[in-house]
Image (cartoon, rainbow, N blue to C red; front, side, top):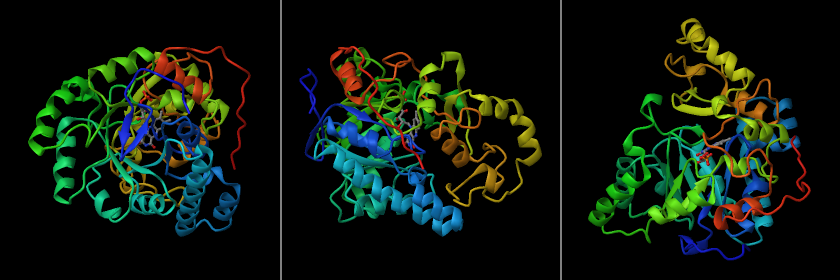
Length: 396
Ligand SMILES: Cc1cc2nc3c(=O)[nH]c(=O)nc-3n(C[C@H](O)[C@H](O)[C@H](O)COP(=O)(O)O)c2cc1C
């Protein structure tokens, strides 16, 4: 477990945790090794549930031999079960293992049920309002954590869930101007709006909590996006957050589950290399302008005019999203196969991958360091001298 620091613990469903949470990162970027290593230190580590078969060569063989949708979906559920078991083993009973599920994903209810069956400690749901989560998990002792972006969304979820007799065990508030991956805002131009400012959200929610008769002890608030230093952790915890969620800095740790070249792309990106664009989900997203994304953005208008409203067959057969710009011919959405691009990034394919990344500089600059070193720096401000790289990489 982690040595002393001066912050109050984050309490989720009766468990005392380090106040730094590791955000879920798909496809395969946060699998068992990252989540288990974070939990082992006494924090909440998160496995991203989407398309985990890429980490299992036998399941990839099974999918190549029988590329029907049902086989791919089954492979992913088997992979999720394996990843939860491996993360729990690595954690050794410390911290918590969460499974991140995106509401925009077709199989989201199956992933939620699999997370419950395989003994995850928490389910964290983003990319959509998780109004069905209490029903999907009824009777299961598991922490439920929605990801939202503003006070209105938080108030809505609290009220709807309370009618079902359930409170979230914590809420992550993710700032669209800083976070990596999909962003909780409909219009990119809107992401700097003051309704997303954490301090404004804390102030607005004070009244909401009082009206509903709940306290932060009942529903702690965790802020996410751009938390990249001890000073930032201190600032937000002192400003009223109960915890901070960190994504990109964990993605580039030694224990991060992606290929070393994935980590290099994120760690070496300069501010001018990081861009926002419209994803196939219809939501804006933030990523590094690697060769494929640069080419796509250069041709975006032409692609939209040419195939924007055409319905195309799902290139992988996974049918991963419930609404996909490419498959469903939704003109104003993005038009590329997100699963193919994210899987290429996981493999370290710099030419063809899509590399999600948060906007801020990284705590250790471009250095790849361990989970423990990162947690220590964020919680205490102490940066230990680097030791030789320890982690090995394996991908199907
Ligand atoms: C590579 C990458 C993949 C991500 N994938 C997901 C995901 O699958 N689901 C999700 O809810 N959030 C996802 N996120 C968001 C992170 O969980 C986290 O909240 C966010 O990146 C925090 O901002 P930071 O990167 O500045 O710390 C992703 C972020 C990154 C960088």
